[in-house]
Length: 307
Image (cartoon, rainbow, N blue to C red; front, side, top):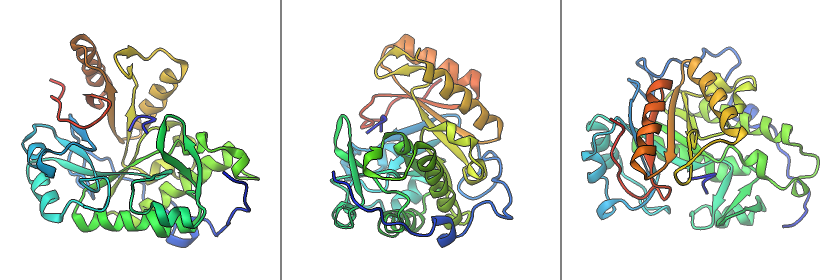
């Protein structure tokens, strides 16, 4: 999801998540190269399909027939609690695809089944700009872990996904600091890294861990050891068909290259429809050694893989 997608109060502070669910880097072995045999992945994909809605007949048969090497799909076919079953995920994996479950880690959409409980526990912060149904949350609060993160990880494991694709780590940049007294961008970034490490520790090797965007978090201790790869949007084209020439485009590319050079998988996606731009993005993926996808921004349809 492109990103994508009030009231002052006393913060409810708890022990850091790392102390609750275990630490991901203390005495642990570094994450293995995702191209090698290991939890969540046994090969390095060269193409991937990113579809979060619009599943044909509410199923995965069309995705199963698609030629891509990997797939990122929502935990649920309806974005709610109609979760994909273990049989459906097994069939998708049997087509030769590595399959990742998409969900957000730094925000909550109002249509998600967990939203009422998250709101009732006063964890909802400011709305995300152009996304009227999405709000940032206190993702460092133990209740966020208990209400959302742990149940979603359990669901992904129960359904047999190979890994999780975690959107909105960039919440640390977007939260209204007036709503979280005492916090800074630096402290919120550290808390996001703590959450990623906690996901890895909880998954225990059963799920590959791929955050989407915010590749600059690689500079924080423990981050690279906790992830198997990264999803990254708009390295080469902005939505839609506009060459990415902003300073942050270059910064993202440099940080993504560093993650690649650390042996991690890169799933890159750009939003373009012009044939020349699709070809240009695909050529860049090939040059960079990224698994690439050029999709429509709505992520509601199957598109052809890069040649």
